[in-house]
Length: 591
Image 1 (cartoon, helix red, strand yellow):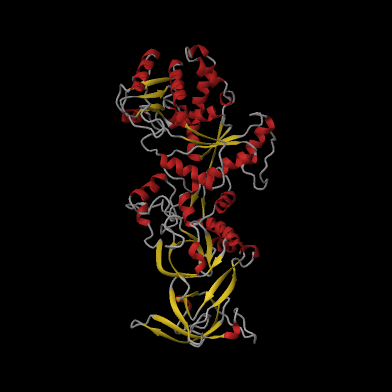
Image 2 (cartoon, rainbow, N blue to C red):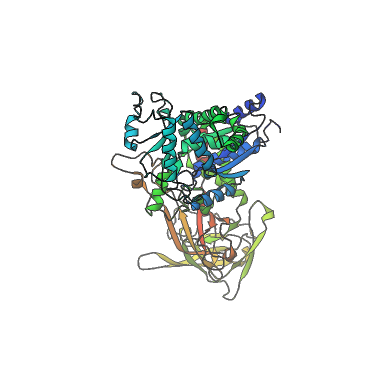
């Protein structure tokens, strides 16, 4: 296998620099093996996308492997729903795993390893309560206090641990702890818990177990079992790295004492043959993604869903991957965003506008164009024949001829945007007003001849005349008009519901709250605008759910993946406005 990455060299991050050096020195014999290890207790968000792109991208660049592993060690919070959603999200982002594992695949091995630690004098059963263990752990300035059960004999600990597995003890009655150092500067290393009792069914193993390994015990050992070479984690796991290493190093020490295995020679042989126990995986931490205008805490996202502040995990205002997908974001735009922000060692916050910029860049190239009137007012062309229908051939993309064309019908009565007409327009308003002439896109020039209002002064109808010599939107006499309006034939248009999504929060940082408030106090009451009187051109009637497109002059949209029914109820979600905030930020920064 080649040591050279296949991916682009530009902007190489510190992770890939480390891997290059490892390959040059032959640390892992040229192997590069990563993993993406989510806990199946929630839906993935945009921060996870960064980790997915890194782990799978590194494996791709170095012709290596990347596993998808579910660290499913807590049966109370985990569910098959989350497993399925995570698999779908990884695939949607454009990646595939070399193997799909679960920490629960290793429950029997992990239990055996825990017994081995007891035999080595490296673990003991502690009957202190959780509160007592927490109080006796000490502080950053004070050492911990050893448990009164710390010096139990190997035989006593083995008997108690086996009784835990047999179901002879209640939840919380005792735990298995590592015997490390109660004076360690890193509090994590002060005899951390390895196993706890939970009489709860597991989503994969059912009622087979009533004790479950802790995440910190399981994580590093699972990496080693799978032969992972580079364990890539976010910075919050940096303090836990010594514990992951201790677990693997202690097992490697135990593997040098085959007499401890007794009748379990088969497990000994299996573990001893694994590459991860000959050359320990190395963990490297990178900065997690922080992005303006939203929250990425799993606890807060769960709260938003459970308390009904959003319609579900895939609400298009949520920063979940499935929420972005339903809103109309493309996997290409998210991958581009992750590549642009790069991989660093220190935390920083990224502008949400950059993500939208990546989206617009992608949709500008791939989104076909259609006509849709979102806030309609009727325009009647008085001199247009009642029984006449014109059909105009319009390109689906202004720059890409390969997209093809569609035929759009035109009739005497049209829908136009209410904001495109003013009774008393100011000087720089170039759209329609009394006596003004404008172009109807790809159709004709029309001049406003009158209008009607309701008792409140709201315009209910606009009257106009058209110039039949301007068919196609151009005049033979060379006269020019400054305004071009989009339109939909009232006779042929199809009614649709349009959902304009905005920011879920009213502040740039909903994690930084004023005293006495929570992040929920910053929810934006105007984050969703539902327009149910919209009219769209007939070509959209059969659009498939999830399809991206642009409503000309209005923004980028997609057919909703849940509620949109081709040939029936049409529901379109606004993915992004046409205005590019990030481009303006960059331009301002250059000046």
